[in-house]
Image 1 (tube, rainbow, N blue to C red):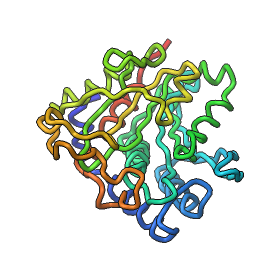
Image 2 (cartoon, helix red, strand yellow; image 1 turned 30 degrees about the vertical axis):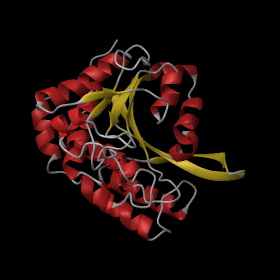
Image 3 (cartoon, rainbow, N blue to C red; image 1 turned 45 degrees about the horizontal axis):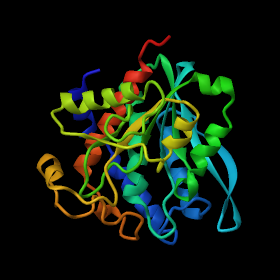
Image 4 (cartoon, rainbow, N blue to C red; image 1 turned 60 degrees about the vertical axis):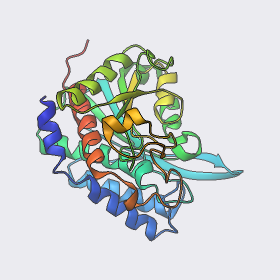
Length: 301
């Protein structure tokens, strides 16, 4: 797989169109797409329609959880490629927004990256050796409930058959960075299960071959990779930043404004279409697609 060719392909793909659709959903549903709301249902229908149009058969994995002393019923969306289930590659991002905003960067951008990776694999004629399961999680903004439910429902054999998990949570921060989860903990001290360092390396290979600066970010428990790591499943992924202030060094690498939050609208009503960096979204989506394809096509023991 040629990393430069993948990036070139994603510079012409429709990630922003997905964000426009999710913005319309929020606009028509009290300004948000939170789990258990009509905005989440409409977001899910959009994702399902896109997956079906690309040739997938999405399914809903329903569950309930507690929020503010109330029971909420919601669902994850799962869609599989062909390939061996003995080495399943799970690729996911959360579909829900917070209750007080449309969540276009957090995490419409991740949804767009995962959805367009699924569509690109079909368009490119990639025939996976290993099954890829594309996942769109509910209730991340409450307590990682959707991904937690998925992992808790796995049998021991299912866990053994899950080769790795790739997560993308915020991929278009307007003052953002290109960051990859620190698989071996060499930079931040919190490592993932064996295999996580390899995932980190494959992401960095994409950025290096495209002459794009990138850095590491910790596994701090704050996104849907956490249930997978706790189950002993190797993990990795992408993050463009939220409330951290951009440093002078990061400005030299990525541009932007020093001293300003990487995403000034994180968890706010202003996380709209005007709160994204579309070029960064192209690069991060290409990286996700490259790593997904690398593992989908990899010969494994």
